[in-house]
Image (cartoon, rainbow, N blue to C red):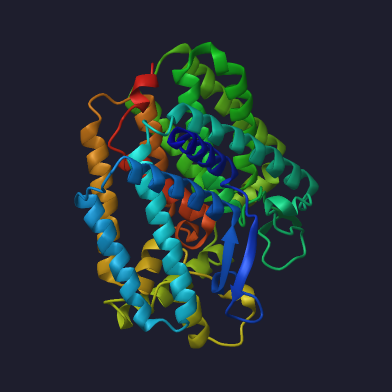
Amino acid sequence: MFKYFEKIGRIFFYIFVFVLPFQTRLILAKWHYPFIEWTSAYLYVTDILVVGFLYLWLVRAVKDNLKPRFDGVGFLLLGFLVLSLLSIVHAQIPTLAWYRMLKLIEFALLFWYVRSNWGTFINPLVCGTAVAVSGILQALIAIAQYLNQSSLGLRLLGESRLDLVTPGVAVFFADGIKYMRAYGTFPHPNVLAAWLLICLWVLIWLYLCYGKRKISFVLIGYTLILIALLLTFSRVIIAVYFVSTLLGIILMRLKEKKVIVLILLTVLISVIFAISYWPQVLARVKVSSQEDAVTERIYYSKVAGGITEKNPLLGVGIGQFIPKFITQIRHRPTHYYQPVHNIYLLISSETGIVSLLIFLFMCGLIIRGFYKKIKILSMGSLAIFSTLFSLLFIGLFDHFLWTLQQGSLMLWLLLGIVAAKSDIIKSHDHS
């Protein structure tokens, strides 16, 4: 009976990884009218799956009389949760704060589940394959969206309503023509780009570690996902991918034939893309200090800095940046109210400076433990480390790792993998 539960829990987790990009959700509550994304509560299909495999894990733990063992990372995580909980005393909308607190607990439990089961109960190869297939599906959707310059009607998968005229849709101008960036089933192109970056590193790992069995699948998938990543026109994340890949090749000193093929394929796709979409590429490469993407980030950072300065200990309450922002500056269009595009400023403004320091120290301790655990740098360990480091860097320029379901799941999932005690991934790694 318990073995049956274990199999179901494992299946739930792999399905969860595959459907992580889906935005399928039910709106549970709204605390602002007209509707604002950041002041509402949702039940996602991924929430149901997380609760499912966590419950089955709890059943297994009770049966085997397993007790949680806290180390430095565990105590830091607990401290982070406690301070986030205490920040609710300053909340302008307490029910919204409690909802965000429950979400944070969910993500922390996901972290603990992955950390405890990665490489043993969770098979890295199966998990990686699920990520790769999910990435290919998202790539196909993203490419079709860009060619169509509108959404595809995939509402059951949580696809946003997309076109060139709807306010809030990510568009840009090139030679006087408006273009919509690719979304997939994510709420923003940058979130799609982050997922595709993860998928590309997973495919590189599969390609270098598993011989000829998957070469055709991996190379086709890599091509589609790289094209889709470029179609997001997410400047920071695209740059992070190319830089991290180059550094990875240098660190691994990879000179074998398969690596040369991968490098040539990447260069070929990038060159063909740049030639085919040169006006759009040029428009996105040029960064003006006056464009909205720059001025908004600077402005929101100043707002977050001011909030933190006035509320340094516990912030204004978890999930309360937008309510506080609205009270400070009223009567603006709803799309004007956005979280600060920096998760570290967002954490400090909502839960306090001490909370931010604990979070940063926890991440540092996780990375230090991962580095000490690896005696020989393998492609699998490099892929995991690169994806986490890339996400933490991206957090300097965007907020989705703290505010959006898919972004938060990516971050805590990767933190759990890097923090895992087991390093079974190396037993598959023949690079």
